[in-house]
Image (cartoon, rainbow, N blue to C red):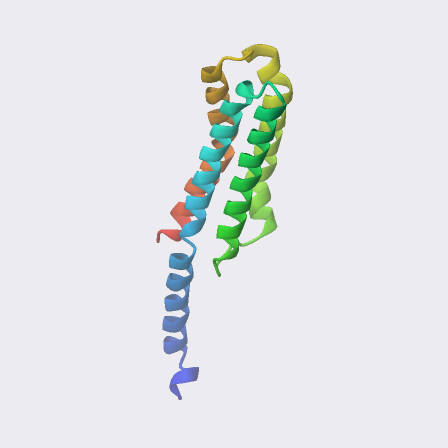
Amino acid sequence: MREETDPVAMLGQAEQAQVRIRRAGRWYPALLAGYGLFTIGIVSWLPAVRGNWSGIAFSLVAVAAVAAMSWWKSRHAVRPTSRRAALRWAVPWTVLYVAAVTWFGPTYLDHVVGWWALMGVVVAIPVFAEAGRVWLRVRR
């Protein structure tokens, strides 16, 4: 048998490719952790948004951060496996975020930044859980 068709050699090449792909995907848990910290930051900052200028500054910072994360994500060859995997954390994050900033926060937290920061941690739980799950997968 030639080496290219030797099953043992092919299995070895496949294992080496898998190791390279996992190493190349180690950026993704870091991005998710950064997104979780970003979530805590924006939810904590919400009680300070009381006027037009603070709202504009808040929006600019949020858009710039999302653009930077998107740019960083686009520079990597290895990306998440599927949209379904992303939806596993994005849907719960969205539900928690919308409930937190439109109902729970304004109703119960008033303008106490500490409580809003704690709520930001709760909203970020799905993102941190996904970061942990992905880290366990790519670190092997």
